[in-house]
Image 1: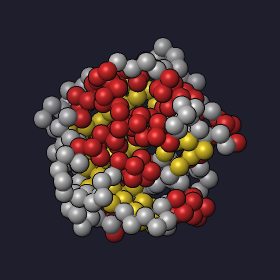
Image 2 (image 1 turned 30 degrees about the horizontal axis):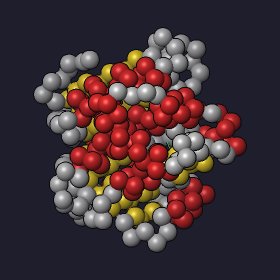
Image 3 (image 1 turned 180 degrees about the vertical axis):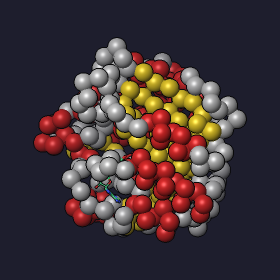
Image 4 (image 1 turned 45 degrees about the vertical axis):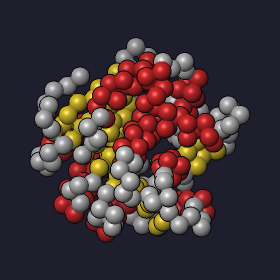
Length: 288
Ligand code: SAM
């Protein structure tokens, strides 16, 4: 386990993932009833962007750095406000030096009745995450293989939940593990809202991944992807995607508002692109 998210915190992939996570949380909160977020690969929760590691790659500058500096039109700012407000809250002076990871973002948006179960397997990162939430009765941090939690921690006792599966993709077979993990989890908790993250880079088996997901016969599956550059040079990530199972009915429309703008703001070359489409659902296989 070599992956450390501090090198990537706040990058373009985090922007899409965390903006969508906020929309999922806010949608759950349209009902008073409590819900649970299960974050299977949680990271350390709060990132110091002035740290040597974050400065070394500087990835956040082309992600949240650009977005915070952008002049967003009102409809776009409105959809992004739960996310951008969370980042602003941590950086009250306007200079961005702290960035919230997925567990922290979810927690910042919670009402008193909402709960978070966060899994982190790296011992050091687990230690930091559990210290971050020490004494917080709404959060439980567990040093557990996140893939196991898709069996062991579902369904949540609230019977309402968001499951974020955000593995590091540092070993082969993570696309297959995502498909198999979703199949396991969905059998246990078909009413959950799932959000699966995956990388886009040269040679990534995206078509087969999508086909494997479609073969699960899960009725509602939305997909969104953002590429910030061409994958032709084959170095690093060119983009990332999210598969959202049982998405809020408003999500696709919200994505259509924010994605073109996020793409323009974060584009690193003229090959930047974005799309949101149903992998399975009433409108499948339409693409935009
Ligand atoms: N979800 C976080 C966020 O959005 O802020 C970022 C998570 S990062 C991409 C992946 C994390 O998963 C790393 O912190 C890594 O240590 C952890 N990890 C790797 N393998 C794991 C496993 N099998 N179970 C749980 N955590 C794991």
